[in-house]
Amino acid sequence: MLRPRFLVGSLPCLLLLFISVHTIAQIDTNLCLVFDFNEHELREKENRSIVKGVGVTMTSDRFGNDNAAVYIQGHNASYLNLGTSDLLKPPHGTISLWVKLDRRVYTGKGYDSNPIFITKNGPGDDFIDAYSIAYESYSGFFGTATTKDSTEEAIIFSREKIRFGQWYHLVVTNNEREYAFYVNGILQNKVPKNFETTFLKTDSVVLGHTASVKNERFAQGVFDDIRIYHRVLSANEVKELYNEPDPNSRHRIIQEIVRYSFVALFFGIVIAIIIVRNKRMLKKQKEQFELYQHIHDLEMKVFRAQMNPHFVSNCIAAIQDMIYQNQIDTAAQYLAKFSFFLRTILNYSDRVFISLKEELEMMRLNVELEQLRFKNKFDFELVVQPGINTDDINIPSLITQPFIENAVWHGLLPLNNVRLPHLKVSVYQQGPDLCIEITDNGVGRTTSGLHPKASSHGTRLVNDKLNTLNKTDREANYRFEIIDLKGTHGEPAGTKVIIRFTYHD
Image 1 (tube, rainbow, N blue to C red):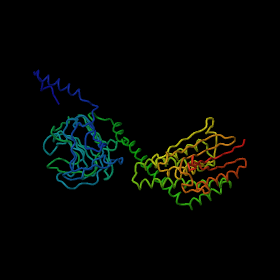
Image 2 (spheres, helix red, strand yellow):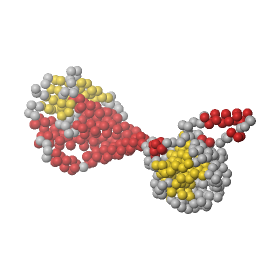
Image 3 (cartoon, rainbow, N blue to C red):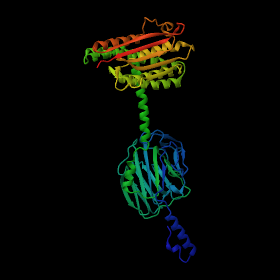
Image 4 (cartoon, rainbow, N blue to C red):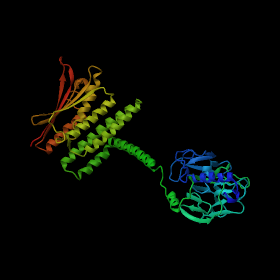
């Protein structure tokens, strides 16, 4: 600190005083060096000081974030060196850090303590602490000290003994008048100090090692979130530092959402497989439904429960086949569409009727799944007659899927380049009937192996479902017909299915 007697009668000294005062006035009191390791690197946040870690590893911080804190091993070859920059050594400032000591380190020589943070004010081994924080091994307390020389020193100890394996927030504030020590946001003591703290310019700021020949001691534990302020923080600011939230909380929430989404997807697939393979469980569920539903509603639920595994089984088989063929990307796309399709089916499965719009949307999803599986080997066309309000018309749920499946699997796919496969669905009004017409230009039922007098399992389910509905509503007349299409020379040219819904006012 400059004193007037050094300047008497000397113009150069006056100039030196002016430059010194001007320099002090330019000190940025908002400056703060931060070593939080949140980027999983040993560096200062703005790279304002070169950090060197010797024999240290990255570990979890107090919030559980992986590789976001530094572990010092507790021996001569393990410490963290923050560098020698003057920015690390504010004479009026605040030192803040988090530490979790694992044990008392007995090895070493000299005064028995485990050093946490130290930088020196000069050469030698005694009374050289510009700033120091340590675990005092004899008493079991945290202690901090700042020393001018052998004549003046400020020392503060924590009020309570520490517990190993527990995180502590340690803060030291210092100016030429006072020296204060906080633990976990609570002031431990504030002592008078009537000297200016000085620093050895070439000395490093070191954690976990005394860097002393006479008093060579070490610390073992986790160190994190080291901050060096160029101003004295208030008690409220220290408390806010202690209560700071996890800076990576948003990232961790996103990780948790992704993790649980994958878990939900996994269980969704498992549930779907169980639904397909465990028919006994489905029968028990149907029996439980029978206790609460009208007899005719129960019959409809039986048919829906039979049809749902039919859908799911085909989709699971498709995914399995793609995986066997190592078509991983296609299988992933198929699985994404299938999950949406499955959710749609499950939404509709407990409803006897759905809107025509919902049925057509589900039909479109079904066709898209088949196109994706068979690499767009067939075209699809949907035509709705103008004037038909698909939102206001209700039809039996899941009624078109078996016919779409038959058209694709047994009609279009066996064509083998005979002609361009084409599937067309038309919705139109014919007298009192609403008609859904499903037409394919495939090989026909005879060529495909489906005899015209035979029917698939899905077709029989649809027939049983429509018959049950007709029994429950005498004014309804739901039916379908299958027409074998012929070419100009009488050869098979595809199949047409017309589903008719007659509604009475």
